[in-house]
Amino acid sequence: MDGNVIESDVLVIGGGIAGCVAAVRAAEAGASVVLVDKTRSVRRSGDAGRGLAFLTTYLDLGEPWDTPEVFAEWYCDIALGLVDMEVARPLGIEPLPAVCRFLEESGVPLRNADGDYERVGRMWTPGPIVLKFDGADIKPRLAERAAATDRVRIIGGVHATSVQLDDTGRAVGATGFDIRSCEFLTFRAGAVIVATGNAERVIFNSPRRDAFHTYHRPYHATTGFALAARAGAVAANIEFLGTFLFPRGFATGAMGNLLEAGGRLVNGNGQLIADLPDVEGERRFGFGIVGKAAGEVLAGRGPVYIDCTHLPPAEIAAISDYISYDAPLFLEFLEQSGIDLSRHPVEFELFNGAWSATGSPKGVVVGADGQTRVPGLFAAGDLATPAYALAGSLASGYVIGRTAAEFARSAAAPVLDASAVAAERRRTLAPLNRTSGIGWREYEHQLQDLMTKYVGMDRNEIGLRQAAEYLRGYAAAAGEVHAGNGHELMRAHEAFDLRLFDEMMTAVALERDESRFSFLMGHYRTDRPGADDQRWLGVSILAGHDGEQPVLEHTVPTPSWRAAQLENRSVVELVGERGARLAGKVG
Image (spheres, rainbow, N blue to C red):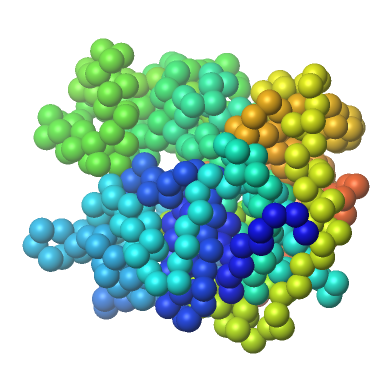
């Protein structure tokens, strides 16, 4: 085997929130840990590197809405029943009080100056379960704790290319390369945790197709999904997109802030969208207020605006103060655009992306211990399902660090397959040996253009089949991509991972021959605009990849939720919605 082998009990790939927490927890359980990340420093890496302001969690302080049971019911509902609650409870919900203590022990303040928790409600929550806190430095604090923990070694500037299996199919390490020197690296470990975030660059990440003009993280590709799929794990619900309203020309979150404060969503005719009747057969994209706004635009009654001009000055000041905490770039956008909330409605436009939106059930499928279908391979954070947002990243890392350490301690010594490592080395470094061909930028841009066109907002069977055919061509074209240095090599492999994920996503979007939406998450088929509850309500599609093509299967993550929802829908069909509500009140 060429070069040195870096050894540890637990290998963590990805140094974001989940990765840092998992590393600490594994080391505290007695394991030696190597954490690798493609950035040189994990201090500000990952989605949380920009800082965070809210943690959606119960605290169990006595209010009826503040319990793990209510939190679990809400999570299952907002995720359309597409999460396994037998996994979500122990992995992402029950640990949350302990996670809050972990954060405070790490120097992250969750209480205000008076020593109290400051909690607010949001449009999608069952009560004020959103904890407002000063999270500007949450990532540096967690990174510092990981770096200061005995038995944790952090190696930056490494892009992972494969999870290595032994002859029994167990994960026993990984490979990667230094993104500056191009040195090929081999890791041997008793357990492997992948925590590389969710899929981001699948479609164009902003309305202007500018990779860095985006509210979300432009640096996440689909590496974790590709690592898991090549090893034999599966992902669930990857057909769903996030659906949003962004200020026109500026990709930043502010829709919820303005609407929660009393802003009115109006169409181009000045009509209040929430009060408009639904028009039978009229196209919509999305659920609730976002879907109605999309319907107005698609019906030619756009653009849409959020109008706060009727609000009193004190309320406008309160909105601005709140947004300065949650979405400070929006205030800069208003100032630079000459928009005064008290005098001007703000124009918004519809946008969707492949990242995980509120309530998303997307991710690599794991069990209650965080282990995938591949023994010894764990997935944590935004990469895994079920793991809800920041709370899920923290909780899954908290649990999986310990369970991975326990697995490594009880398993046989890991043995790498030298021939498999050598083959991966050849595959990894191949683009460096090509002096001409396709550059990574062209390859990735064409993939994004293809996915935006055929697998974006408007999908249908013809377009999806066409996309699948094109993607087979891109698989062959990967052999023509060249790289001149370590950075280009990393971007080339990110593009290869995108192509593999694109194949799985396209296959799943074709398989789900209906349309379905939650609060900010949707799958819209123009040729199947309605929901087919009998076939698809609460049914997930799992996607793997056999090296040649996607492999799909269906599953019902929480059968009790599906049964209850189908029963409720049957009552509504029999007696009407109003009768069902009355029956519920009486019964």
